[in-house]
Image 1: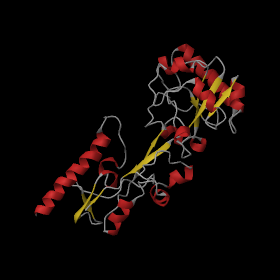
Image 2: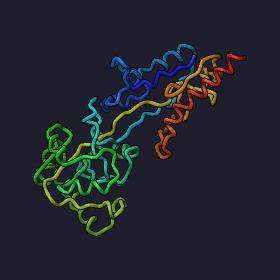
Image 3: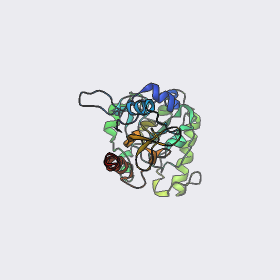
Length: 288
């Protein structure tokens, strides 16, 4: 038997056990896998079957969190995606806290440490020309942002003070001082505070001004059932269970702690090749 049912992302009880922080933080599930009838998959069925057969469940599961341009706290894809370029970001304290020239797969680490695990990306009316200079996950236009003003994700103000005052809990005076400091560094041509490249330090001066609320989105869980290099399921004594295999996210030993995107194709390559490896080893097992 080969277990290939995906992870446990859509099973709230299992997520609560393996990754309780996601429940505490209120992360949504905007990218669930579905079957042909529209039912959610990735419900941990393979984990359960393996466990009932005596399998060892990996102690360290890895929750894949990425900053996709939205707050990440609903099940709506529209609310969870947006521009993620390296524009100024501040927290509820009105403070800048990171070098914004950071990929979506790494930006969740500094954002996780911020109040309410959220931040706000700031731009002025020159957003589109500045965005064109950036590598970003999802392109956007100001017209699209205007349509979303008031949805709890996009905020707009004719002045910076008006903009910051529209955010409940924002330290307005600190935010104004942060933008002033950022503009000074942009004009100076050197980010003394966080070392962001000068060409990506764009002053925020001409209204109207916009804020996009950012958090991190939960994609899927990797880890699952303990396996060996032949994709055989291991018991609690690390011995193979005869005839039982696990592939893909059911037995994702390769990405227990980190889901790398630095080498394109490695994640999907593992998912596809794990099935091939298991099939070849099953064939050898049946010949024995």
